[in-house]
Image (cartoon, rainbow, N blue to C red; front, top):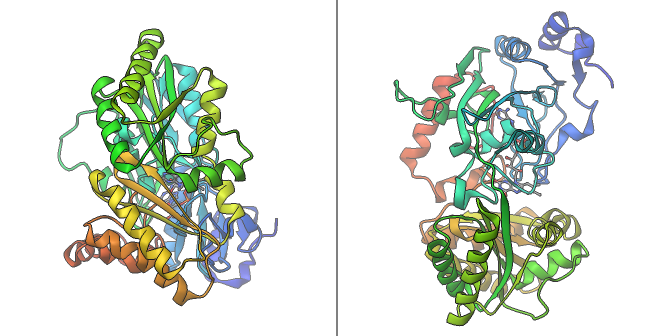
Length: 465
Ligand code: FAD
């Protein structure tokens, strides 16, 4: 890898003097640091820094601060809104070397990790120790806990365990001037003054860089019951959700909806087998974390039988093995291959009240079919969380068309009082739409907080607000 040219700028000079030339990579030394999954085009950063500890990171940020140097925090670069994509002349601070799992304490139900730890590695370590880290999303193999915290990631288990916020007990954050703010709380209850960690969860790196995280763990389920269910429409899915929640006493751990177009496309893109022979308008992937696999499995099957008898669902395939469960989930998690095959895509991640998702999907579909009949659009989402994803495939590349497609979706969401970003954040891509979901007063307060914590505006400039 090439190293930054010390003569290029005083800040590089200072960084090289403090850490040595080997620790300050040239901005174009590593192409993978230049993009995320959003497709947003960035620029060439001034340098790429990869600290190994909070202390190193804090000293690096302090040097940048002293020189008024703009900085962008990078996690696993799986973001879908361009927040981690560097702008021209920014300094990248990548957390990739800060990936240590420091401790897992099953009795207290906590895990303490450096922010660069990859989600799947932490999930696996917790499982081995006998506990569940409930945060889970399709990008688990690459995304980092710091990125999950910064975006308050949602994912597949929110219906049972909540967003990432609910799995965070404590944080350590480096502020714009390099100050280390330790909030490494390990208790479920701590009302001694304001709970400042919540300022940073979901703040997309504009208020500080997350360096360590204390996670709240859950009891490890002894088994899982999973089914792929066919339904007539969204109203039936909603009825089925209520029935499942009641019959399984809140143990539903995922309730993922896929309209026919999404399921067919994901099956084809990933060369998968269809678990159900028929062709249905809507599918739901439901799973339940079980404490007593045998009796819970029987309750799960009885719940499905009742739903078929009542006419709420049309058919169901129950997973008979771990391989079946994985095969069902491969359809839902097969989005990466869809995005690859149908690039360039526009990816929407909106939320409306749970009862309104069906209506929202129908209105968005009608808008797109009216103005863009040649474009394929795929609908899926997390029903229990009111979260709808829409992927519009092979979109035209000109800015005017893209803006009009976005408006076709966001105008519906705005009318329904929903959010233009349910779980992916705002980043660079959705900044112009923030005011569709947040009032002027809310955005003004976000700016006030930003100015208070980062008066020079060096952290993740141009993102979110
Ligand atoms: P990055 O992409 O590197 O960064 C994201 C943002 O966080 C940027 O603004 C960056 O500056 C900031 N950031 C990163 N690390 C830090 C840090 N340590 N301190 C401060 N700021 C930081 N998201 C969901 O919510 N739910 C899903 O179900 C979901 N599924 C996905 C499936 C696929 C296939 C893909 C590609 C993405 C998916 N995502 C999903 C989006 C993405 O994975 C999440 O937003 C994830 O939390 C980003 O983590 P990351 O480490 O990759 O962050």
